[in-house]
Image (cartoon, rainbow, N blue to C red; front, side):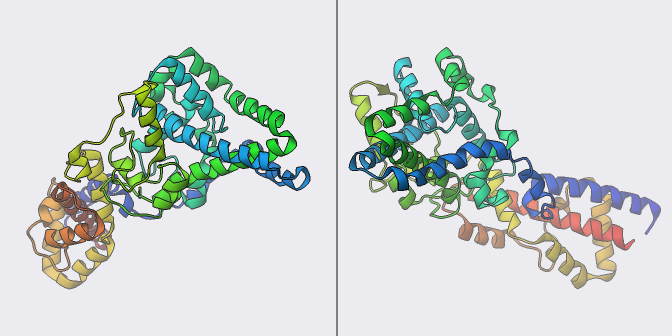
Length: 414
């Protein structure tokens, strides 16, 4: 191989590898520094969280009364509603409108759950939707593991700060900024009220038990709802509908529906998908406490909507990642060999275009055809009018990755 060809081969390899890594992160080599991310955990900040759990054991000494059980039940459902209607559907997604007084009431009720301020919660959740199940997601079971996505991420130092730019629409209210600075005031007042109403059992069983139950019901949406359930829509992430989670989260378990149309106040799209939060908000709209309840258009309900470019790109990367470019490139090199392989490598090295444009139409052995990619896409994803777009992008990603491997092989051999 001449020096000129060798130079172009090296240049091609660098360019193709860079493109493949950018466009096909999921197909690159496994991460080697996963533990370094978890080293950022602020363990002292986890102490109050652990103490809240340990406080539940105090019921062995305080006893359990019927009044404390009723307090626990009422506070659980009241605060699950606050999580769903307040933190999530209103402050994170603005799925409905309300006046300033009821907005403040929602904020106070939401923060009585001791899940930080509504501004912090909404900012993190908006970031989650922007990067759902990518490496930039704050809580993805796919990249960080189940335990970290369930609760470990909330103690990470890098997630402690609040990006107020993401919630500038609410950060302009002084009362919400005050609550942001004094985030535990609502929860502390509620704990005191439980003590006054129910005594020690009211505090332990009524407040602490319900708080812990609300914690993990909320966290299950971040973890289990991205692991277990059904996917009706192509969303480019792992969100799933889970009827069991919907039962004890007042409708939040219809998570794939939500990711398909985030601004909808109704997350149970079918009549049989129970969504108590929506029913209550609908009732509140009759007395004009809330208004402008957003619901998905018919084209979304029929699953006939065109997907956005971000979703198409993520779905294409998922589909492409189901093929092994290293294995395919190795088989091609072994099968054709000799002069034919050299010609192919020279073409890849000499061209300034992407590898997909060189490999398309060559009918190389074991090179996935568009028909094969389409068949796998139909098996992996739900029905969508954007399937052709997903397959076309996946086809290019696969060919680019294979071309990059062939380039790398050519360089190593020479």
